[in-house]
Length: 113
Length: 112
Image 1: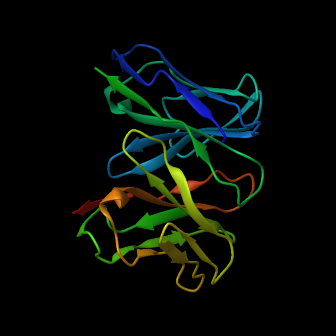
Image 2 (image 1 turned 90 degrees about the horizontal axis):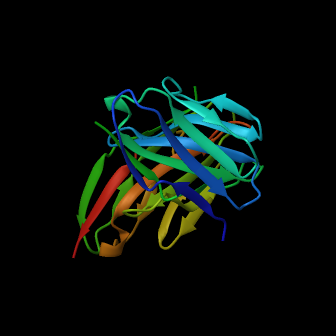
């Protein structure tokens, strides 16, 4: 079974601080994604990547940066965390092909105080 | 841009009730459509998918038919169980390099 591991599972951050969320996959997948989950909004796409050392902006990239240093690792960086970034963040990977399914991690619950 | 609309935010049913969750999409090309299910404390997981008009996807008693004419992919189940309580997401992918987009999700609660 394909595996996506997110760390940490939960984090409390202070407003204005820097937060890094990490994602590691052992699926040998080229494509990786970061989504944000909020009640009433579902899963919204923040950043994604097709290949190592390259990232793309999703639908809500403002306030977030992404880094893909290798095929296996994909990080989401909040340089100046804000209250509005309190949410659950999911990382996912998938293989090439339009019909390919996403494999999700268990999520990171981020609380910004 | 490409998008998915789920009209029901929450659905509350009793066991053995019939379930319908509506999903409509808007896409620039010919999308593949997905239903994902998310249990508490976990990430979403694929329920099933369909990639052609009139194709039916199904799994665990749930089913949906791809309807290009009405741009819909409604989720149905004839008799729900308490264990079906979860959040259900409709999603689409338009082409290989296009990131999947999700609807707002529907929280299903089933009472015994």
